[in-house]
Image (cartoon, rainbow, N blue to C red):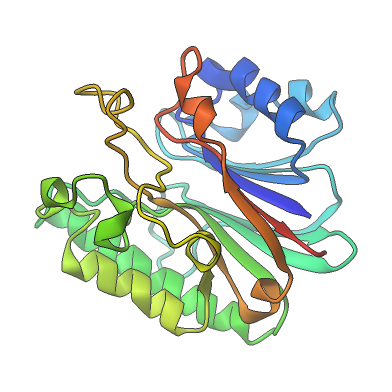
Amino acid sequence: MKIATFNINGILARTEALLTWLDEASPDVVCLQEIKKVDAEFPRAVFEARGWTVQTHGQKSFNGVAILSKLPLEDVTRGLPGDESDDQARWIEATVLGRRKVRVCSLYLPNGNPAPGPKYDYKLAWMARMEARVRQLLVSEQPLVFCGDYNVIPQAEDAANPKDWLKDALFLPESRRAFFRLLNLGLTDAVRVRDGRPGVYSYWDFQRGAWERNNGIRIDHHLLSPQAADLLQEIGIDKAVRGRDKPSDHVPVWAVLDA
């Protein structure tokens, strides 16, 4: 089972680019972030015509997450538990029925800037709620994949110029500690367990020639439960997608599980 995550940065602006990549990469499941459309405005018919099951949790103009799957889905839930007043569409999860069942969560973690401030407080509170949800799901002892745009640079080697990010919410110590609390629950960073090299990035800003200078950061992650990590066969980052016409500032990151 090939599971990919891709912050598309606006589904309507990049539907054709996404379809081209889907045809090339042939994933079984794709977790999307920043679809930036309510559910009714997602172009689901285009994807369903190509055999994709589409589940969305959308929001007008901002945020929004989705799961596309060539395999059957069950038990789809929307929204991160823990704060019923939270109206930001940042979390969707479903069980994928492959050769083995895999619970997949597509997430778009808050950016948190400017920090300090209310947006950063929201980011840290959201990460605490995510930690609580991960704890709940781990009790099931099933393969779990938590993938998406975490808006967290875990370590210095995950940025081309880490000093540029010292005061940014993505790299502040509190953000990184919250990320490592997730790992300390027993989750595995799929990319890092297979590729420890520096210079492995998933995001390049549209400004200041970041792509041309390879001034990137790694903020799109697959975190795997122990049961999913045991099934991990391969990982990859499709960097070349960033150099195409009208790209997202993120690129797809994928993992293959024996499931």
